[in-house]
Length: 182
Ligand code: ADP
Ligand code: 5GP
Image (cartoon, rainbow, N blue to C red; front, side):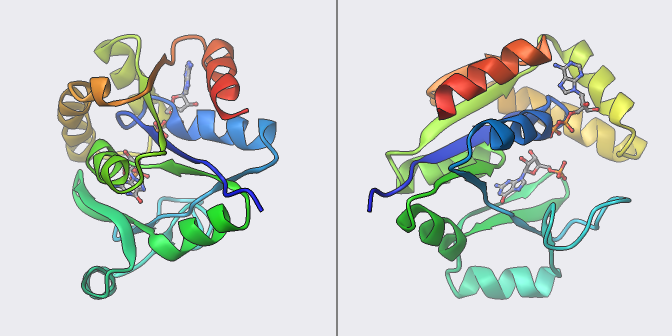
């Protein structure tokens, strides 16, 4: 059986990665989403095992020590990581896999899995990004400013990626992603 392809989607918080990912998963039937582990607390409406596996710092540290992560990073104020076994099982069974991870994790994947297709989602401007992040209404003021200041550092690394999608008009951005994953 043909091994699947790995797609890595990154970009600043609030740029629209989750929105684009939902569309891509509907458009590409062979594409699977890898559910990450995080030490962040669930937001209202989030369910363990659906958006993330919500685990303690202790468990996260144990999993690092056991070498279970394909990549992991300290993002904003918490740890996030992708389990190696999840990704490998899906790829070996012929499914394509989409990771939605931050730039630090993406660079780890790029090094370990050179065949991965790297996609960066950029905002049309920082003002638009702030507006979207505020509009989503999920972050407290402190967390919002951390996310915005990290956005600048993340944007500086976009040249490491194979594709940059500017998420201005949502339909156009979805089309671009669809063309890449299909
Ligand atoms: P991320 O997963 O990158 O943090 P989200 O997908 O949660 O971002 O999007 C952040 C907010 O911006 C959401 O409220 C979403 O509905 C909105 N959004 C996403 N893409 C667009 C777009 N192209 N135009 C306007 N709003 C958008
Ligand atoms: P949020 O807290 O908004 O869900 O996610 C915050 C950031 O963590 C986003 O940039 C998201 O892409 C990133 N992230 C989510 N899962 C992972 C992961 O498994 N590894 C890494 N490195 N980053 C992740």
